[in-house]
Image (cartoon, rainbow, N blue to C red):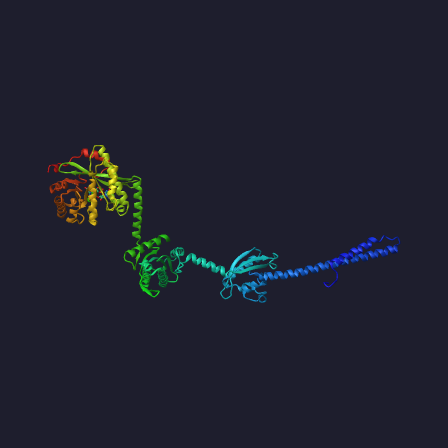
Length: 629
Ligand code: C2E
Ligand code: CA
Ligand code: CA
């Protein structure tokens, strides 16, 4: 009826005319006329209905044309979309698909109709897809999943599934949007690579290494095998960089990476921490031998000549190794252990590997903790000086005291120097403790002076403290703080061995201290290897005979000969001599006989707290066997 001449305007006009005619006619009196008019009216109304019907038809037609056109436009848009759209039936077959969807599956649209969508999905991901499809068809709402296709390189697809239609299983359908995420995956991989791999060598970086180490530890715990962690550092790599430039150095590092990888199995890890430092994780080892073989392989591989930019060079490397779970530590500690062992290998000249020594580490850790504790003790005022009297045996007089350090430990009681000083003396804490001893002894001296007791005090100086460049300045400052304490009342006991090392420097230092008025004694004399020249050059006033000779001199001819020798030297060089370790009257008598009147020892008095000194002095008398001589 599209060809019909009626249109809306005509129809409206026609109806208007008919209504007008009806209104113009008055109702006639005779029945025939009235009947005729009624009929005419009916005809008119019929015409009007006809016109309206036509009008409705016309509108319907126009709407259907518009609908058709609009559908065409939507179909166009749907094919224009870059996302693949599918409508799947309740059986999972394809009912509708746009061009992009057909492209994704690599087929003509017509070939896809009524085919199972899941057949285009790789077998590895198909079951996941089928499960999701079933869920959606069963009424669940939207689901996202990722699958790969069966096509050539199995491109990955991101799928968005949504159930549509009636809730009955047969009536329900699934619409599905599919996007190829190959590019996104590539970008993700790239970001991943940048975050976990070293840009120069493409080896795992520290982050990935930590991850792998954690995994390897977990794995080793399960399968009873061992895991070797090796820290590798190239020997003299800095010189290569400095000589040939960084570009050259970089190429060497890349080559080192290749060689390391060739020495290990595919499941092992070779990581670069930065610079010329690498870490190897060798898992699944049956024992130490297997690990040692691998280390030998690495050392030899890196020792073969390199040719970079036509320039041949030779390299060597230092490795530190530890075995988990023998060394049952956390990842960070394992790495620290291997670093430590690597350092030992370096110290030993490089081009070798060293095992981490757990005992050594334990001792080192204990050492650090002890130092920490002593430092705290010092701050908390737990260190004490005890004093041991020194006497003139022949005259029965007190000539001074030696300050000896003690640690009044809150839980362990009074500790002797042997229990904590060895740790102190190998560290810089020796300087801190030494300064404290110096000040504390001077303070005590001035306290005694205030009591009318003029008592020379000797203090023990560790070699580390003595070798401080500002030692003399420290001493001067300490003396200035206690002006009551006379400098010549202070004696510094230094070990004979200290002076041996740096004779010139020490003799200058002794001179400088002497200028301040302070005296020096050579402690434990006879235990070192002092020469006569050496003794001649050191301006020390006192030689202190070591207690080991005093202890044995009554029974051992050699010990006695040494005691006699030291006394002889003191006479020859015009030095005073004192013996330590006098435990019996007989010891004292012999010393007096040999020409040594000064002594200290348990036979006279044990070291004691300063408060006890005045009373001890007041009460002491020398044995008569001594004073009678
Ligand atoms: P040292 O300087 O040879 O001190 C003498 C040590 O012999 C003292 O041990 C003393 O108590 C002990 N002794 C004294 N008379 C006798 C005796 O008749 N028989 C025996 N068997 N031993 C006797 P102490 O107090 O345990 O000190 C040991 C060492 O610790 C000292 O040996 C000294 O080298 C060092 N030391 C002590 N105090 C200090 C200090 O303040 N600073 C430094 N750097 N070292 C100190
Ligand atoms: Ca001493
Ligand atoms: Ca001694």
